[in-house]
Length: 271
Ligand SMILES: Nc1ncnc2c1ncn2[C@@H]1O[C@H](COP(=O)(O)OP(=O)(O)OP(=O)(O)O)[C@@H](O)[C@H]1O
Ligand SMILES: [Mg+2]
Image (cartoon, rainbow, N blue to C red; front, side, top):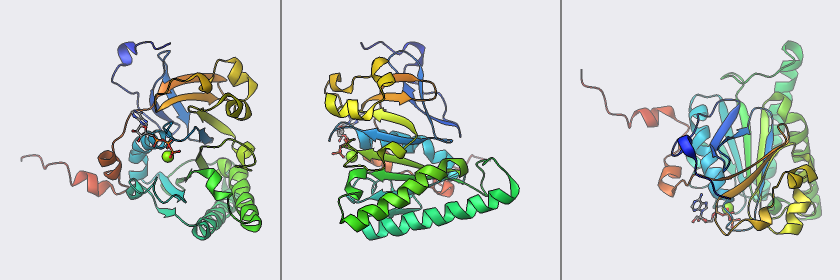
């Protein structure tokens, strides 16, 4: 199954505003995640490597954040997963109340942008004036473990964001251990890339479309190697198998949205 990476070995093609490049798959193709107008849902059992996957995506996203073209927001009810990379985020909500407020704010920002676009342009283009907004939710299922009323509030706000956001630069990246619709009522509103990490056969069959299974994505057969990902790209109708690039905590903590913090680390050139 494992092929060597040939001439790509040790090198990753550049990420662009259209796609983040996460590495090279076992067939030798660059693994590109559309982050222009597609959301992302990554599911895998505990310890399968979801946070590692997010870390490698954040490393790729950092230059675009520093350029002011992308803004990251987070929801992390475990209060753990996003803390190391918090320097890259505008704001991270860690309680259900805070998460509801954040979703309200994002929905308001989205409505404002749509109103502006309605009078000016049909197509959204990412710019410093209208940056792309990516909401990262670690453990999506945790959001829906509240009382019935709160669960419904989360569902309504997320459905609105997932439904209207892509057309005006608002995306959601969701991560979860559990792919079941009872656990994530908004699962089928994620239109975009699906990444399956190690999980059981029943879970995989709930998550992946039959075309992905026919294309050979079988995450229940993955060996016990953290970071092994099966990606399904619905646009290309292509399945890729790859391992995330490991990002250690120090590297994660060094991520910042402030480009001046990076240039300060570059020594002055001698005159
Ligand atoms: N690409 C990788 N290379 C090497 N080790 C990895 C890689 N990805 C993950 N790991 C190892 O696996 C461990 C678990 O990964 P991670 O924390 O990303 O899992 P998770 O799916 O987020 O789990 P949980 O659902 O419990 O949060 C990490 O602490 C790390 O030691
Ligand atoms: Mg995790």
